[in-house]
Image 1 (tube, rainbow, N blue to C red):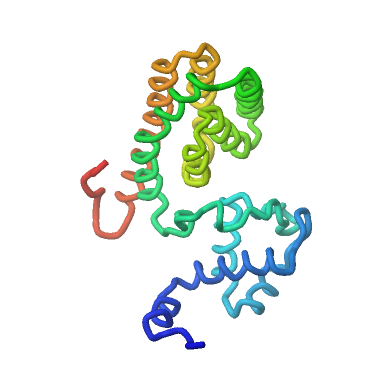
Image 2: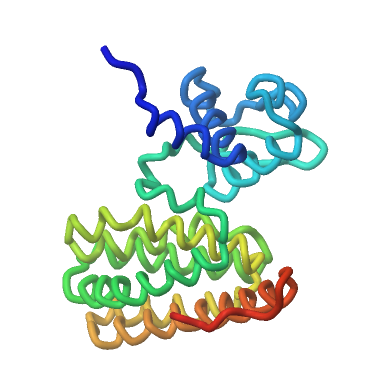
Length: 251
């Protein structure tokens, strides 16, 4: 069997160190395996394992926290939260560097897809689907009002809407949507809690009523609100970056 060619080797060599360590850490978690709820070695030990500095290890851990795979407990250490593999992020979106640009690009795609998914959900959701969606909406609202982490249930909410559509292809798009929700939350620091409550409720009510047009419009409003928040953060980020102000908005 032939070994890796020069082009493949060059691609490996060009991969950023943080991305390489993230992949190796994920492989370590799945390969050992490190069970959900178990503690990882400390940063120094991980650095020795992957021949990387502590800052690089910290970057890889942070990325896996954003993806919902790891959980950092202050004063205690880093624990495995999920064994969700890279198959849940087939395009590798979570490994792209510019999270602000990624969030805006994902929202462009979401504005094309999710309003139609919501409309289809309103037309095809079963009674059981509607009950599950309402329960998730209620749970996200309660978590938001009490200041707790609502992101896992937020992701479950969007996943449920896709499932309500009864379209298997739409369900297969959920991993990308999940990446978008996690990326957005990591940038906004989960600040849009009231907007989340109101727009999720509007989407849910329309789907429960079987109102496809209403569900479509409510989802557009939800995503537009998210986009405005990300756009403001991106412009602020660009204004503090070396070289001047923000580039023209191409979205």
